[in-house]
Amino acid sequence: MHKTLLITGLMGLGISPSVFAQSQPLTNSANVVASCSVATTQNINFGSIDALDQNSFSGQSQGNVQIKCTKGSYSMMLSNGASPVSGLQNGTCVQRMKAAKSNARIVYALNTSNSYTTIYPSNGNACTASTSTGQTYANLIFDDATRVRNVPIFASIQKYYLNFNAFTADNYSDTLNVLVYF
Image (cartoon, helix red, strand yellow):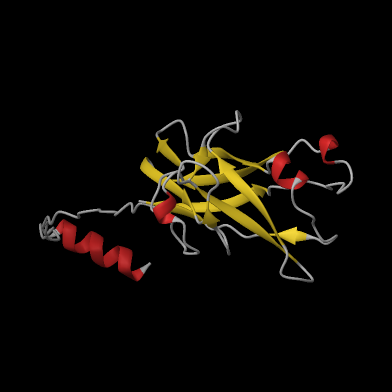
């Protein structure tokens, strides 16, 4: 109550409190960086191969990689796996799955479409067990409406290869790295 009387008293004497105003701009900023995350949503799995009846084996499989990126254009590459070799035709590069219990290997090819006719990478000179092949598997564009892309990865094992090679019964596997350049 005492404070109220004091202010009222000052106002009554004609003394008013001074108001000081000063302006300074406040600048807001943010830096949106190019960013991507990669999650394999479906591995490539050829299933069981009957060594005595390869004709029942389709030789084809498909995996899928889900990529999330900020707005922009990106290139996706796949590594050549752990033990690639120069391909059987046209200077391509093919991959090999290694047996779990021995050094036996099954040759397979990555393909760029579900027609399984175009082998990736097509440059046999880039056929090394490295983290990068130097060749684009897919060009991806992310815009305001698209933040996630599902990229199918096609793979095949040639039946003639299975018919002319004897394979040890085992689980075969290989690991490919998915690389997104931005």
